Length: 348
Image 1 (cartoon, rainbow, N blue to C red):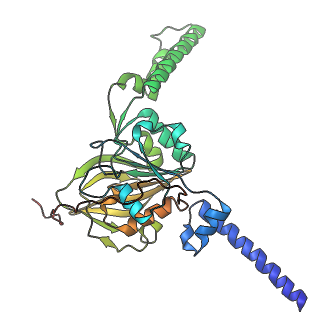
Image 2: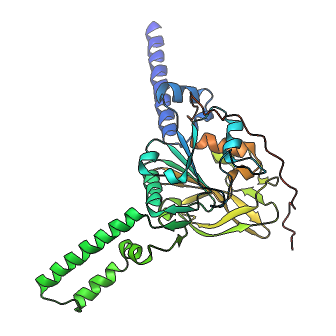
């Protein structure tokens, strides 16, 4: 009897350990959120990982894209920072100017939120792509990063690569006893003109528009930004996704008027919600997984007028995010109510 009891206890302990290991794996790789199991967030964050996600909110000045990311902007509606802090007061969220976006900065953070940051340099774009490919989480809003310019350092590298290429080609032509107008030289030059190096040298003074290199992690193409004089609806496509948990099938009480029209690759993205604009609908929220993951919002998330959607999103991207020393401005700011505008698409 005692022997059987001992065996049963051993089996229960082994089973409990296996369950914990399974939960750790599922939570670590973000296949489930720790809140799925009551009490698991506390165990996972404070006992197992003993760490909390650090989140950077990268933003540009007013006019540099759609959205209202930070609480010190004087606008008539709440900012993203303001709305999130109202729901999750003690969070490790630090607003940072896009001018400070660099590899060294992002090494300190697990999650990056990019809002109202349309204009970025080529080096900053590469930094964001590398961040996701190293396992980071990027929340990408609207038309952020869609006006890209050549960073001076990237231009210098392109000039060096250009010189290296021509020196190498000269040595090859010498060894083959061929001239610069030979077929071999023309084919080599034609191939070189298709490289990023050549493109950088030819167009360094011009803005380049669209997601470009970010397509590698977003699996989407940016088309245009739309502003309407009326509020738009959201329809939920994946109600079982943690971002959409507890939401109605359709959100009709939003304050969304600005959004980016994007084309998402259906084979590489999970479309969570659509924007409904008259008879048309476009991807509104979708997720793409690389080594890390990207959550894309075509509209400013603070405009949803949905505390559930914002809370779900935060808990999904930063499940261990409580800050022992929250910023002093954790209290929500007072904001004026939104101005009255039509709420349907019936505008001429």
